[in-house]
Amino acid sequence: MIDFFLEAYKNATITQIVLEFIAFVLGIASVWFAKKENILVYPTGLVATIITTYLLWIAGYLGDMMINLYFSVMSIYGWWNWNRKDKNANSLPITRTDFKEKIIGIALFFLTIVVVFAIYKTVGQEIKKENYVDITAAGIFFTAMWYMANKKIENWTLWILGDFIVTPIYAYRGLGMLSLQYLIFTGLAISAYLEWRRILQQKII
Image 1 (cartoon, rainbow, N blue to C red):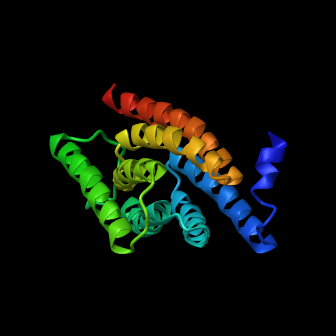
Image 2 (spheres, rainbow, N blue to C red):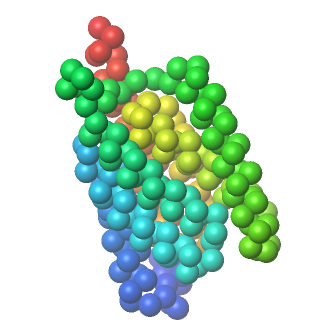
């Protein structure tokens, strides 16, 4: 197992290994901050996703790169939205999606799939069987990030599903640290869902 993990890095530069480790640590920190409703979720996540976008670009994984590029953009929006106050000086609360937001989420999922597929075709990159998993995961993650930026508890359900899908894919590709990171993300996302659900239930009582 250790040999499999280390084999992927035999041709990697020291810079790439260091960058992947930084993204690994900051990515985990970001999910932890999200669980606690701490605004630091966004600056830590932003740095992690920018680094990961660069690393995936070098590796040639276009679909995954696009996911992380989108994460970077949505981190800026989420940072602003979480800091925003209403006229009563109340911050953005945790809520569940209403019917309209569910429809938007479904539309965003399918729109993402179409856009990522089109980009693969436009750049002339061969779409392998594993890339269809990338494309599906992209739709899940894009929607999850939008829900998170608006503090919708359903974001954690989507993160859990998406993390479960991509963890073995990254391991198969030899991106050991990313695979381990998403495995940890899965556990953190489950914990975060339970935490946000507890907060919601307290508001109802």
